[in-house]
Length: 176
Length: 212
Image (cartoon, each protein chain N blue to C red):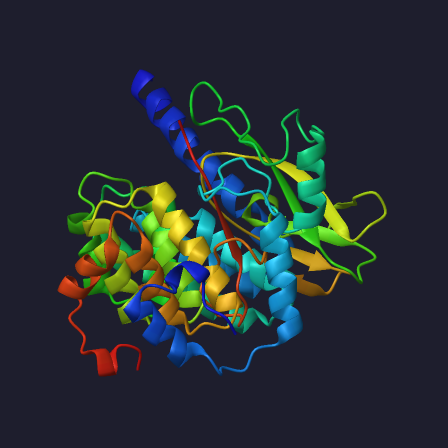
C-alpha cells in the first residue's frame, strides 16, 4: 500500500497515509493498476465522446500511433460535437477480458440485450471494442463476458449496488 | 373536427414515445409481470417521472436472469426513488439528473441531503455532481461523508471537469487500497481550488478522529 507521492509534504496526508498503511492489498493488483495508469492517456474530463480506456495498453498504443478508429475520431480525443448539441455522439468502448471468447456491450441504449452489440476482439488480443452513438445524457452500461459474466468498466463511475446486487457503469455524454 | 384532430395528434405524440419505451416489456415478460410493470409505468407517467430508467431496470433484471418478483421490486424501488428525487430537487431538473439522483438515494443518500444540492450549486448542472456522488457511495465512501466532501468541493466552485478528475483520483486511491473516506477527503484537500484550509474549516474534525 502506498500513498501518492505528492502527499508526502502534507502533514494531514502523512497522518492519513500512516493510518492507511497496513491494509490488506493484493500487490499484483496494485502493480496492474499502476501499469495501467502509467500508460493510459491522461485527462480527467467526464469523457463525453472519448475512448473509454479500459484496455489502456491497447488504447495507449493506438493513441501513440495516431490510429483513427470508430466513426472517424481518434481514441483518446473527443469526437466532434454535433451542431445542435442533442444528436448522438459516437462513443468507442473497450474492455479487457483475458479469458473471453466473446464480449458484448449492454446498457440502456440497447435494452440490456447481450445479442445487440457484440464487441470485436482487437488484433487477436484481450481487448474488446465496440462503438455506439449515444445522445447527451447519462447512460448505464456493462460488459457481458462469455455470455454469462457481467463486468463493470473499472475506470468509469459506477452506480451503487442495485436491487439485483450488481453495479453498472455510468457514462455522461455532454452536450454543447 | 379540427379539435378532435388536434387532440388525436397530441395523443399520438404523447403515446408514441411511451409505447416505444415500454414495447419490450410485453415481448420479454410473462403477461402478469408485464401487466404489473405497466401499472408501475402508468404510475410514473402520472407523476411525470421519466420512464426510460424504469424500463431499463426491468430489462437489466431480465439480462441478469433474476426472478420476476425481484424485477418488480427493483422497478418499484426505483419509482419511489425517482418520486423522492423529484420532490427533493424540484421540477426543473432533467430526466438524467433525476435518474442520477434516484441512484444516489438508493445508495443511501438522504432526501434532505439531496435537496441541498441546488443551493450548493445554484448555477450549474447537477448531473455530474450526482454521478460523482453515486460513484463515491458505490466505492464505499459512507453516504454522509460523500455528501459532505462533494458539497465542500461544490461550495469552492469545482467545475464538472474538476469533479471528474477528483473522482478519478479517489477511484485510483481506493483501487490501490486506500480507505474510501480517507481517499475522498485527502483528494479534496489536494484540489487547488479547495485546499486543506477549506476542508478543515468546513470540516473541523479533531486529528485523532480524522479517519475513524
